[in-house]
Length: 248
Image (cartoon, rainbow, N blue to C red):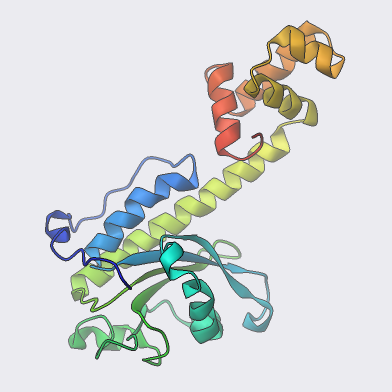
């Protein structure tokens, strides 16, 4: 994939899973995914979520996060074109990891003795090899985490470890989405407007004049928004609202 191998760097990676504190934004997932990428001796990762409901024919895979970079534009479309329908059908029936060999590799990732516990996809379609770990959380939050590269060769223990970590990442991503939705429902339009103006550097008197409210009412809106966002002060509430995408 045009990236240096991380084989020399992952020797110190612990093989035991450690739960991380609750994430506050998607960017918090990147260090964990990079650590998992190194553990897999891969050169890239991607998270795909299943969008839509019902039969696989009415669903699609949507890429939520990836680090393939500008030099590998088109990898996402190439992957879904090659294996998207197969993965949607697979997750309805099985939670076994999937593997495939790229056009330049002779074998798919994973030891031979672990092959009964993996699903092999057709080789040689894509320029890169990879592993896809399915995660099924219920009606929503289902998807795959991919690790891609050249000459990926994880041990069976590593594959099991990675699958467990993938489940935690997907659960945290779903939890983040649910918290964002709950916060959006909790905040009123006035609270969001006051937070936006406060985030723009306006003081309460300026916000009151801008919105045609009293200073007391503005402070009340900012105070209630701070509580709803589980923040200790107005500055933290503004920062959390920005991270969650409610204000810019």
